[in-house]
Length: 301
Image (cartoon, rainbow, N blue to C red; front, side, top):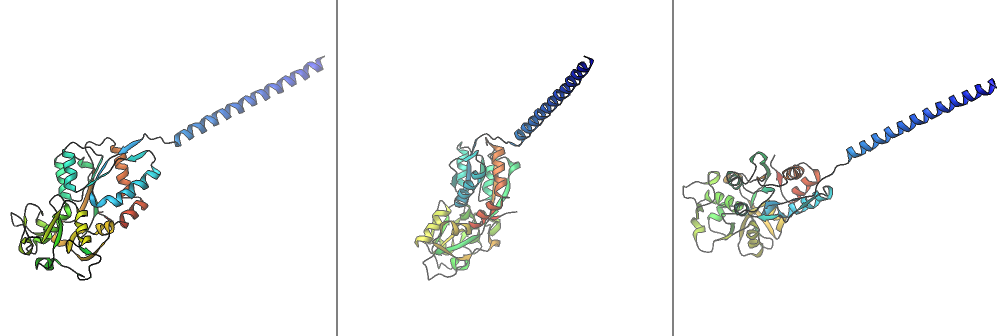
């Protein structure tokens, strides 16, 4: 009997040890699973859906459309409202009229200065995004004009197309024309010291029909495409954007202010963080940079 009691004790002891071991394994598995679940949750990123509204200079339209399409491929929670492409002056007028945006990209430092002074942007987010060149173009089919200089314009050889005062490309063109006596500002300023606004065409360009003013650089480019003018003053990027024209001269950079495209988050932005993330991506992502370069834009920094 004692023998059986001893055997029973051994069996019960072994069973207890096994039970404790199983309990320990179960506990360890539970802890491991809990840790795994916690880790998985930590790697999951959730984003609220946002819509970004961008106000951008006309000349950015083709490139920006590609940038937005590329961005949403990896940022599914972001959509873009109908991006407004207008002259920099018109963009400021929209904001003055109560329109709201998250991002403002201007083709003119002076126009962005005006937006900052009016309180339309968060000045701490402002930076110079791109730079560009001003060129003289003629119709691709024009075989008579193979080159052009500011001096040729001053001699009255060609009818020209220029952006009006709301168009930065027009301002830069007038600054350059002032250096060869074809544009006169009220205070007599010329070149980089001039504003390219508030003056009048002079010299050979004072004659009727010599200058056609347009409300956008795109319209200016179309005048050259159609042959309605001999020479149009546009950005290098516009040649890529519109086609149908060829460059016959580059306007000397020392005859006008530096062509800079400033960008900023607006003061009324409802998605400031996402807007900043998009701008950061635009100037750092390799694929994004390739798109800008394809359309003739070069980073300012």
